[in-house]
Image 1 (cartoon, each protein chain N blue to C red):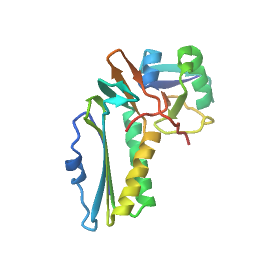
Image 2 (cartoon, rainbow over the protein chains, first blue to last red):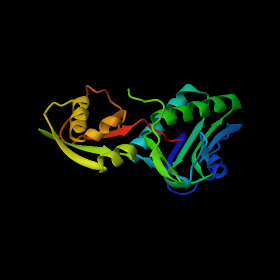
Image 3 (cartoon, rainbow over the protein chains, first blue to last red):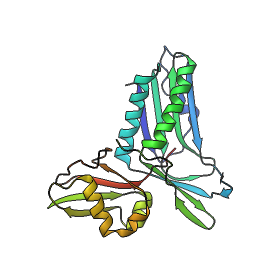
Image 4 (cartoon, rainbow over the protein chains, first blue to last red):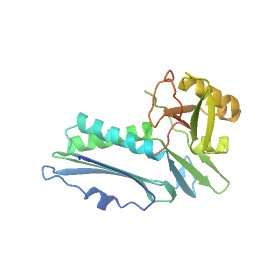
Length: 143
Length: 80
């Protein structure tokens, strides 16, 4: 299988995840390390809570990985998203794309995070000193 | 009537005060009609822009539901 998809409550180590699978034909891995931002539009976040519709999230992550593998000259896609409570600076998502040449891996990685944020049923709650709010995404997705 | 299992996540779970509710809806109800039916019974949901999925898949509003189907109702996703 040329993708690896996971949801976990455990801390993520981008370097370890990126090196889990390195096809011998590949010369580059591009990784995205998405982590919890302290300030959003000037407001300070204390921590985040991520919730997933887990079976559907895994299906949608698998779909976007397969679409990327069909669309770009890449050889392996790893997507790992953390759920539960995350502190400032902790990694929430890792995407790692391995390819023979770097350009396709950069392009596929950017495409994958855009699609993840558009389609994969995961929600983020920002918790502040004086309240909390579930963030509603910018764009909706329905086929 | 058929029985469907409605699931809520994040903002919709907080608004509905539940993560899962079983509803009886008319036979041949579409996903769109079932969504309207749920919002009538939980009017506070109307303050969200709602998306839905049927049996863990994004499907059109015209999709006909069957007994035992799972209808997930949620807001625009915000992972990443």
